[in-house]
Each structure stands twice: as C-alpha cells, then as structure tokens.
Amino acid sequence: MIVRFIAVALLGWMLGFAWFAIFLPQPLDGRQTDAIVVLTGGAGRIDRGLSLLQDGAAKRMLISGVDRSVRPAELAAQYKAPERLFSCCITLGREAIDTRSNAIETAHWLERRDFKTVRLITTDWHMRRSALELRQALPERVTLVYDAVPSRPSLTMLAREYNKYLLRRAAALIGI
Image (tube, rainbow, N blue to C red):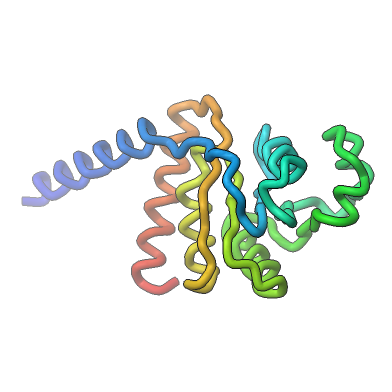
C-alpha cells in the first residue's frame, strides 16, 4: 500500500512537471494596461518593461526588487532609456528580496495608485509562482495579465522552480 502511494505520488509529480516544463507561459501582445510590474532577477525583464512603457502600453511601471544602491540615472544609462522616463513613470521598488515580498511590494504600490489592470513581467519559468503570489496579495478588483520573457532554463532550474511552486500552492491551500 505504501509503495503504491509513493508510486502514484511520483507519477503525479512527473506529469505535473511535464505540464510545467512544456507549457511555459508566453509573451503577451502589446495590449494596454494601467501599470507594468517587472520583477528583477532575470535577463530581458527590464528591457521588456521599458519597451512596453515607451510604446504606451501602460502609464506607469514598478521595478520590484531593486538594490538600494542603484540610482535611476544608472538604470537609464544601462538600458539606454531616457532619464525623464524614470523620473515621470517608473518607480524603483527597493523593499522586496524574494518573490513573496515582490508580491507584497507590488500590491502596496498598486493600492496607492488605484490601478485596475497590471501586466506582470518575469521570466517564463518564474511566471506561475510569481502570479500565484501576486494573486494572493492583490485585491479581487485588480486584473492581472501575464507577460513572460522567454528563456532557455535547464531541467534542474525547472525542477527547482516546480518544487517551489508546489510548496507555495500547498502553503496557500492551508492559508500560509
């Protein structure tokens, strides 16, 4: 009986992992939202957010998880973006240190501005867990759309992220 239970659990994990790895979230079209939220930590995320903001896909952007020593002028120079864009339309969130605190920081930022729609930008393998965290932190009235930055993650990276996702789902089910 115990061996069967372990076999069924392992089969469930493997099927879930296959779904997780094969059907990674994809980039979104340029549809309009009130705000863009970029979670730091992966290549192409800030580039994607800046490009969309400059194209008028949103009014404001939060870059969550920025190191305290980083200045807006440095980011503008690094990403070849106008400094005026950083002064008018971009907030650097400096409180987040992980995905869960990214969600809390984002929820507070959105509440202060009364935005109704937000585009979440993060890497494809990170999107499901990030979206889960953000959905838990946001009020129901806020519509969240996903805009994944494509990547080429290793199987190890995918397995690690899948396990984190499962643990976070389990914690959410019991109210943590």
